[in-house]
View 1 (tube, rainbow, N blue to C red):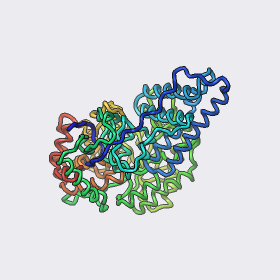
View 2 (cartoon, helix red, strand yellow):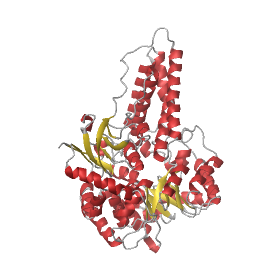
View 3 (cartoon, rainbow, N blue to C red):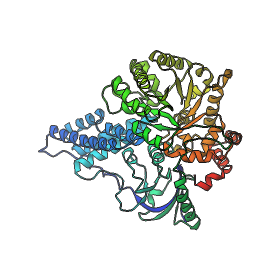
View 4 (tube, one colour):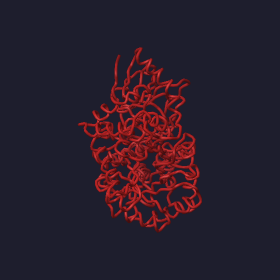
Length: 561
């Protein structure tokens, strides 16, 4: 039996046959010139028409997607009309280069620039290469790269998936997902979790598995095996039986001794919110408001924003909805708000900081939130991303008060915010830990890079200590304030137990993870969760923290989580 170890990012035990992603679009010949009878103007027009077709096709797919998938497709569509990309290609065409070769070279140049910037912008480099291939395919009149067609379900194997591909995976056809690249917080991992697909990333060598090979995938353990044995077949059958149980959440997060841990959902709009409500979410722990700003050259009006926010509020009447104000910048550039030329966007003007350079946008967003809240019955909480100091927290709280918002809070995703949580939480009513960014910043490890996957995990004891420090700060002076987690860490059932033991008051995740997290929480008391948290904090590294906790939670093995 041949095994391929990787990083498990979405649980499940599946046996199926492999289908490899098709080979990418071939590179146009170096030095390829446009035909003598084709003018530069005509070739440029042809290129722009192809780019528009790619943009429109991706937008059409985005219209039928929701949540993370919708956001990824919209961001990729935006890249198809990127001014820098098309201008660079037009210059090459003007020098005699063919349209295909021009967009290929321009895409390589822009992608390299973004990659060198690091952080979130490095992930945009993948988007550019995806868009480049789609435009070349359109110019050639051939099918764009994408998920292979199949009449039967299969396990998809790829080096990595373009954002537009991960956003449209069909769980009815794709049984599990394996990539040789990517990291635990890559687009591939996030979309797999949102779709409930078992997935393993950073599994070196899997691109060499032949089409039609039968493999066993364990998305929790992060392993792939060729020629599954009897035990693995039994494990896959057990998972199939348990999967139906893990799809139903009774609407209450609670430990074995009755300690309440409300389980909330991460959503991006009204459709997501309605789906989360149907799955039993106790509220919304992260409403990503930037989705209604994407794919626009101008700021949406207060009325447009209010309507978008109200669609989410209406899905949870009388329940908690935590809204994050606009998290623009880095991987979510907006032409009317952010500067695409920043040398290090992940550490630049993003989130709350955009109010430093473009005042007024945040004020108008808060007005829209207040207007939507007045017209709904939801219990609305509002938090700002990328808060670093108590001074910033106080300023944001003042802005909320001025807008008529009574429950201001902050995201804790910058290590300084965790380290000074006591001072910050004197200024606001609550905090929510964004563990994806907190991990990235604490470990100085780009969350999209497969080689750094072992660093970029919230199981790192250093990250868990920052979570603990935030909770300690929330309890200072006898005035306890809520501290939730809305990063991907909350969707890991074992880590959810540890976070509960550290004193986190709510957990928010993709709605598909609610039932699994609830099932595991019910098997431990609060005191047991606290002991497991101590065990994780005392571990010398993330791997041992995870394994030590999992050893004490046999239910994980029973459920295949």
